[in-house]
Length: 180
Image 1 (cartoon, rainbow, N blue to C red):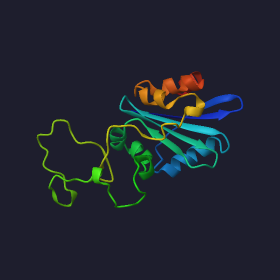
Image 2: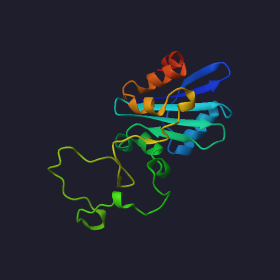
Image 3: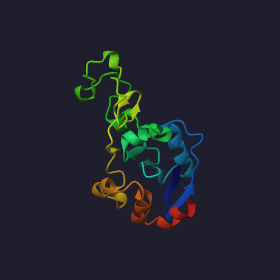
């Protein structure tokens, strides 16, 4: 189950709107959705998948969107999460086939084919475009710092309560709850 909401900072405070992501296929679509709410003010798209991961997309006017995802591997298994996991967010060269040594599969399999893992009880890590993604936070850890949520606070958030905690720190808890 997903929940997504847009928070727009206006002169009168924060305004929230529930948003449907059914027609969203790319980060550009998400950015356009945010700019439809306000093309001048700060707009935050808050998205979560039940206790698995959460993400924040920040759009400030015409600037490029800034993104934070709490658990890259969990988000990679989600259609909406994959939209947020761009090469830039994952720290990879855009469109490049160059892999750094840490990301190479050096287990003796050919052509990057996965080794047989029938006895692997932990399951596979998420992947974006076939590459392994870790269960760590990715993206801009300072995305909300100027709004009252420090890097340390952002990293410490529990996936189940993250959006409510963020909204509370922004002074937007009531408006977020109206669309939840």
